[in-house]
Length: 571
Ligand code: C2O
Ligand code: CU
Image (cartoon, rainbow, N blue to C red):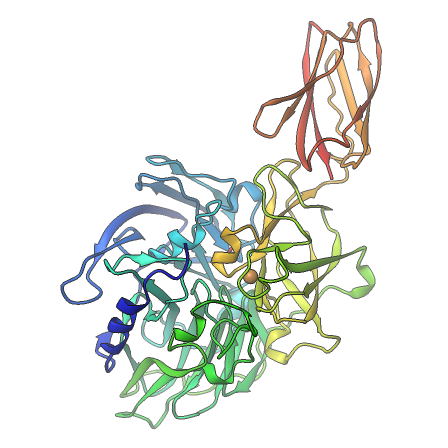
């Protein structure tokens, strides 16, 4: 099903000329109540063609949401498509039922309305669909928007922050088109380059300090950004917030899902033009976007035919106009103070091996994590509220995978035993793990627990994610869910151990004889009918679970007067 249509793409690619389209600056929605209408539409990307697209509140892409830390917001997401989808708030610290992962399905003609308090620090986040096996298609067809969080720590620093004037959101994406100019996925033909949904874009910027909020919203491609003039810039923030201090750089590598905020000093440059450029020739092999992925025959078919791979090319033209009154003229050195969790508080270490399903397809995939493919009904990792953990990622494949964890941010502790570069040492939610690399990060599972609804971790190469390179984790509250007690009833139950690998012991009391005991899976299907137990006022059951697959189950007991259920987790 891959590698459909090389020739048509090459025709389009040679038509790419000079920057000729003003880059679209997505409209802003702000406040605390947001109405987001997912819809289909068409765009004429190339003369004489019509491409079916998806968008939010418009035919393509989505508005920028600007919210304040501490505000309680409601997002009414209406699905006007004729297929189900989901919307995930990438990087936001929210309860699992508000996360918009594959379990929060929005059926056609329905509205999903998560409400939550904004707890994140000021930074650039984004939102995009996350349906089971459908992420690449829905994102590629156009659904992706910025979510900008503001807070008082950021507001206290002199920084450009006038949206669309000196503070610009820029999402860079490559897309593939098939012979009918429909957006195609699962090909290596992503030759069309968009910034904010604009082909051949230019941006008018004032001759002062400007802020670029860069997001790599591509399905597969990593970029090595810099400027055509090789001028340096300052990195001020990453995925989860501002850095401690600004960092001088002339390149920044960004894998899918990653965000960086940079400041560029354009003072004295009125009348000049230059380009944000991708220096793809500098990317190490193994990264999608570099000159090669794989070794010998174990490679991605047709990869080398995509002219963007391993190449240097312009991404966005910057046209410098006169400075504005009161424009920012300085670049701060120190920004915020932010410290990682202490290693001494770590209570769990886990290792995740990134593997190919087959040893002959270590570049092309499909891939898995610790031998497991994503399964909607099962839980891969169970952790506890307030656990501080080190997660280690080992890449046994021949392609680099950007690993993303939902809800929590992390700090990279080491990359092959060495500390991360300064700009990667802040709060992050995506980290690129190169072939052969071993990366450790520290994280803490704060604020939210839920015994039923999991969060996701996955590769943010959307084709890999859709193929199952994703796992789920539950955050349990040790006080309320490992031993669940149902009080004020004629029936009283608890279970231990829970989660368990082998068996659950269910104990409790019942005023009346138990009539029925039923075990359900997460979809409500009866798994097993257990024998009837009579005249037991003291309940004492051993439920062997070693033939059950991993996941969440519900055991229901009924004593004629009362029905009680207890959630059981099989590890
Ligand atoms: Cu940006 Cu789980 O995704
Ligand atoms: Cu991957």
